[in-house]
Length: 493
Image (tube, rainbow, N blue to C red; front, side, top):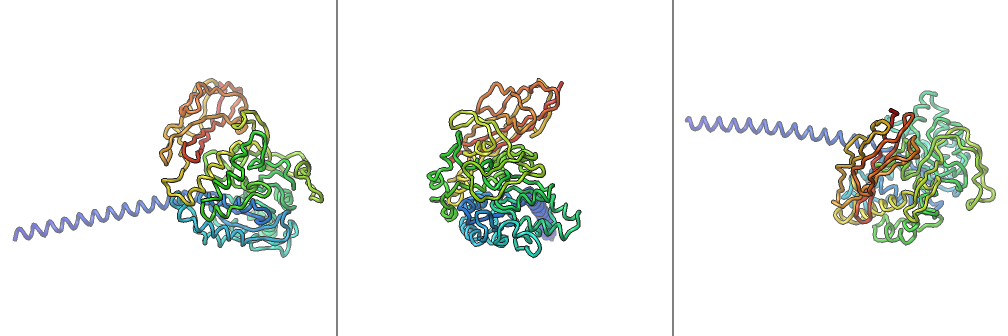
């Protein structure tokens, strides 16, 4: 009997332990779900919200840019893909061409997800394809000119989400202009201003007359553009156009065939041949890619999409040079400051000569963003082990700190890793145009592969900021680069 009681007590004790253990497991599971959910929400909340306006079919480059855009789409929230007109395509919109590319994307999606999470199903993106009116420019703005595209823009802006909405404009802007016209007409000034403040617009020059109208009538809207209907002075030309010092190999038809089009699944096969220039619209979203260098809210910092400064540019007639055309709309003076052309001074990796200009702010990174695109296209068909993935830079100190004139400090990339176990090269450099200090900074002893670099702060007479860029490149195929930006404030003694 005693044995039975002991057995019963032991069983009871075991049951109680199981209950406790089970409860602990349950609690841990709940906590893990909460952490995972919070992390997912945090990641989601950090993503840029993006709407694309595209005059797709006016030129093959819109289709090219859309394919690159989709290859990075796990890094942002696609809020809309809107087919529009432009000066090159005045009476037609082609949403069906966007749908066709999304179908190709859907076929490679399962393989993309082997490499990174966050890529959305094609069907979820297809419902966000909309269209503007098939009319040119300001003919599509005003009473009775609403379209599903303009209504969709308003709906996205009205969502209970305070994050900015980036409008990446690859053609004309009249669909956005109509949305703004209606907001101004139907909402109170306070309500309207709240929506305007969410907008971040980057247009590939002016491809209809509604872009200048927006800048003139909505002077507080964040707007990045090289103004003008022709493209002579445009920063975005740095994406691919052949220029002295630029790497033309990585934008050649041969390179595109090998690295993008052939052997890269249905999405690669959908990438059209170049007609006028490769991916002229891509700079409108390159600055949104999470690479450690880009900071889209600060166009003056510089990045893959170029560098821009906020000022009211002097009037220049863009209808000159190689893009001069007869019967083209006349440029007008800007009426307020915009984010526009800024110069970088660089030494070319191709010919080792120095160059200064606004297009240099993009082509200086050309090899790096082309290799990055090529690697992602490999993800369409290759397993994780077969493909290359970018390194993950780290810092042993804050991204921003303060020192005094003449003080020695260290730039330290200790903790940097590579997901494929590749060897890595390190390069620290001063980006003078991005900060206030334009002079020389002592970076000695200097080595291209020194991850822990001693630096002597320059002598200053007032507070100055210095932007240092860490460039980490792996030795995989293709070689991939990621960055860290360190902003050091130097105070006088």
